[in-house]
Length: 228
Image (cartoon, rainbow, N blue to C red; front, side, top):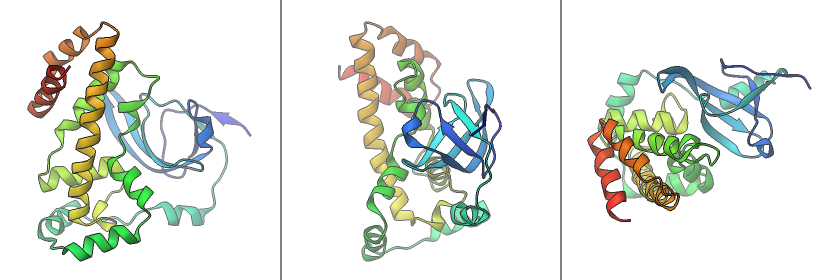
């Protein structure tokens, strides 16, 4: 099957991850334009045959597009419903959920999907082929998100690749997911700092701190370094 390298992707493209061939073919669910270190890139949500749904940054992920057409019916399955963002925020603020409601929804949903989607750390934070400092910066950038309703929705969109996360999750589920994401992120941040120390390059973390403009990221980095 012929393949081509591309830098621009759109929904429906079929790709392979060069560093993760075991994932098999993947179908692009959504593509969002982003800026990575001053350069144009895309954040893609891809559903891989042997991995499931993964969010990748084209600035760091090595993808190859496969020249093949996909069954149109598959698009219908992968395309999430969309709503106006202002409507989402209003719904998010006014959602009232009981314990039985959101617990029941979680128990009925595939547990692994919930875990992987809401609090699995994105690839730019964990890819072992990336320099530790690059992963550290990507990790600290996620501290831009807060539990503020609009910010939490933005985090959920980034994390899941959905235009409307509340079409799938309740407000309470997103809050729980963000809390768990924070725990996983803190553990990961400590591990990155330990790796830098083990290599004798802890000064790189101090250099990263100098350009940090997110107060929460500064505090988290200081905490991780003080716990060495």
